[in-house]
Length: 112
Image 1 (cartoon, rainbow, N blue to C red):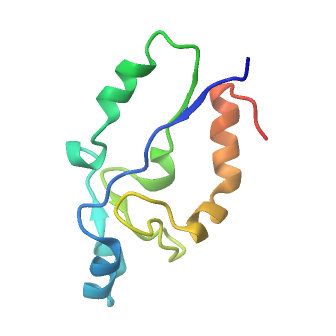
Image 2 (image 1 turned 90 degrees about the vertical axis):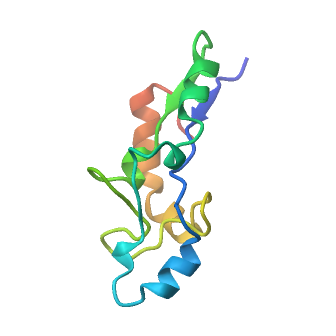
């Protein structure tokens, strides 16, 4: 039987990332989501309930997207994290791949 690895969804941006970046060209770091707002992680509670009792490895990528009390759309190096409100950009995926592998390892999940 293959192991089950569940990676929690990425934070949902409150507005369309492209629109926000276009509106805030001078300071793209103003495009942020608040991790304390339920809409940022709309399925977190449901996911935890669904996973309880299952033999699955759970990985939460929130640390890749949020720092402290904000989830900025742009990381500290200027890479845009999301291509739309709910999906990770290809550039950011490539940039954090090693960190994703580390999170997988920390969860005990087998790594590729």
